[in-house]
Length: 301
Image 1 (cartoon, rainbow, N blue to C red):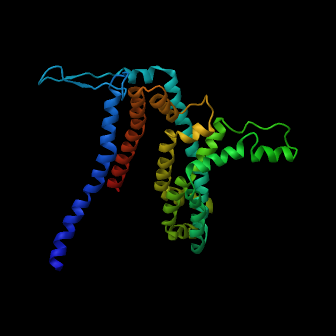
Image 2 (cartoon, helix red, strand yellow):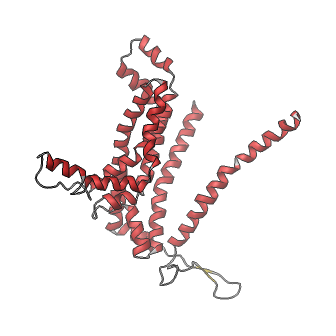
Image 3 (cartoon, one colour):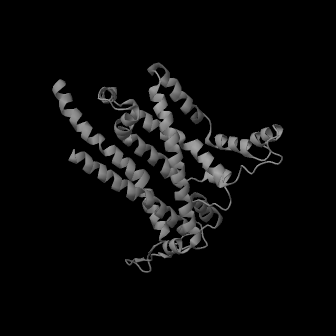
């Protein structure tokens, strides 16, 4: 029996490696190919409102008609370029703010006694027990002209008229930071928790100041968690739709709202698919390059 298990277990391990690739094929590659196919089609008045790129005029013959005009429209129209720029700017700003706040909170959690760290993590995870929409609507209640904050400021005599706290880029940024901050805290905390305290103790024995220990030991060793947190925040924020729609300004359109408008309001599926393909490539290609650099770095060590 033992010899049989020794033969079967390595075989199973090799087969288990296939599972992530099957998952990637089913839920990324195939949907992406369908999306790319739609982006090369023409818009027509039909259900669905796209033409087929494969035509069969005669038996045994096939013609392929590809329309690249949607990609040209994306890069030539300032409306879509502005949407990409606004999305990237908001995503970068959200990532920076989440990094500053998230690193401080993760570092504070690491400094807690081990018996209390679990309670700190629970406090961070409690918002996830409520609906995402409820948390966003809570900010509407707080920031509206008749909301809690304006009412309190008027009652305290600090202002005479309500402040425009809602439906602007500031309120959208506040909602993005609030909702995505835990995605920055958790990977950084997981990295800091694994940090060997002996490194810091040795540096302290050699006369390193607390700032120098943090700058030369803690920060470099926590870089994998920082990179993971930045990816987990930056990528979904760029394509975010709900928060900018409910809290943001009508003028500050992000690419997620533009995609919604093209798909459901204008029913221009090829153009919306082209926007989605470009947005996806903006993420996938840099991430592939980053992964390759990390592999080279690990191979050179």
